[in-house]
Structure formats: C-alpha cells, structure tokens
Amino acid sequence: MKKVIVCDSGLGGLNVAARFFNEKAQDAEPCDIVYFNAYPSQEGGFNKLPSKLSQEMLLRNVFEGMAKFKPDHCLIACNTLSIIYDRMRAWYTPPFPVSGIIEAAVNGLAAAVQEMPDASVLIVGTNSTIESGVYSYRFSKHVSSRRIRSLACPGLATRLESDPAAPEIKASIADYAKEASLLWKTPPKKLLLALCCTHFEYALPFWQEEFGKVFGDGLRIVNPNALLGKDICGKSFSYHSKIAFFPGAQESIGAYFKDRAPAISAALKKAKPDNELFKL
Image (cartoon, rainbow, N blue to C red; front, side, top):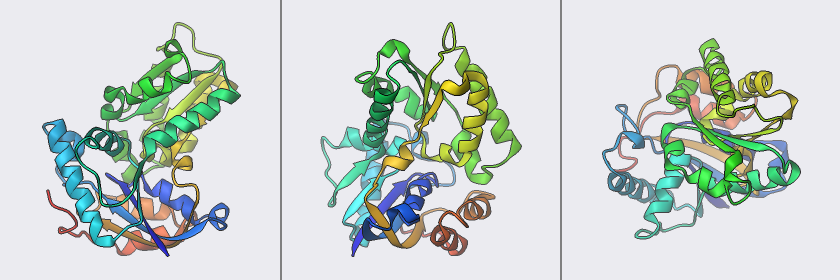
C-alpha cells in the first residue's frame, strides 16, 4: 500500500487529509496517510525566519525528516511551503515526488472562470502568500489582472486553530468582507473568492455568510483544499509534529473532525510532540 505524506506548517492541511476518508474517496487508491506538521518552533513559523535562504534550508531539513517514513508521495498542503518549494527546486530535489497546493488552486480557479467568465477574483491568504504575488501572477493567465484583487488576513490562520467557531473569527471575516468591498470602485456583481490558505476552510460557513452579505448571490468560493490529491483513499492516519499544540488547538480541531474524519480526531487526541522529527 502506498504511503502519502500531507505536509503543512500547522493544522490547515488536515482539511486536505480529511477528504481522503470520506465516502467519495472510497473508490480511489488506498493509501496510508502520514500528516507531517512542519511548524518549526513555538516561537514562530517559516515566516519568522530572517531570509528566503533560511526558509529554503529549513524546508530541506523538513523533507529529509520525511524521508524516514519512506513516502511514495508528498502533498504540500500549505501555500507558504509551496511557495518556498517552488523557489528551491532550482537547487534541491527531494528523494520522493512532491506536489504543492498552488497548482491545485490555479486549476480550480481556471475551472471556475470557465463557468463564470465575467467574474472578478479576490485572493485571501496569509501576509506571506499575498506579498509573494504568486497567485495574482498565476491567476492573471486565466482572468484579466484588472479584475483581480488580494487581501491579507494576518494572524487568522493561527487563531482558527484555537477555535474555528469563535465569535471573534466571524467578526474578523465580516471586517475582511467590508475591507474587500473597498478594493473596487463598485463591488462586482460576480465574485470568485479564492481561499488561498488551507486553514481558512475551518471557517467556511463564515466566509460564505459574511462575504455573501456584501457581495450577494454572485459570490462563489474556490477552495483549493478540495482539489489536492483527489485520487487518494485513506486507510490509516498518523499525526507527527515537532512542537506541541497551541492552546486549545488539540481539543477544538479534534472536535472539528470527530464526525468528518474520525481517524484524524483519534490521532490528534493521542498526539505528542517529537523533537527529533526534523532538524532546525
């Protein structure tokens, strides 16, 4: 049986892994799913590192840490890590095939644009993802750059891990919706909202509700999490992390997956940090 690693710097990629355990995946290829949390330190993640080179060197260490699991494939379910991986491919090749979520997002948007050719596009993500400009550039091949806007949502990913259903999460997304409406002289009648952070799916009902209030019935959400690794059926799941969970995350995210993917919920409940998972 093949072994597939799902990697994220945090818990957002669990939204990708969960789909491998639903009924729609049962006819796909059976695989052992290994979740590899690449968040390096309680003090901060990849975005806290001082340079692009230091990010690339750390991600190389992450790949080398994965090698002990002897994976047949690695899915990078993280926009930040996918961006770093694209940069470092010029000088480093992991010892196993790797796919990133950026390609899945671009393909998903391309399909959505075919169905809504007159829609505008709003990209939401972390600071690093938005500042990289990668999605604005890649999406402009499918829709005019004049119709593309980007909005950073700083700190939202981490807060979602603590409690995705918290009232303050909904309030933040409502604020983002109002801020987004100001990015155009007149808010578009049709909008493709691209959730370019794997964590953002935890608050999917809030995105739909709050952005729907502002942009109306012409809103459609593009969720790349649903598009990465579509031909996989999970038969087992294990969770591995160098660091302990942030406060509240183990309980809240475990509860989130209790019915959606019981195997993930059970693994999170008994998970413990492994300081030797990869080198810093």
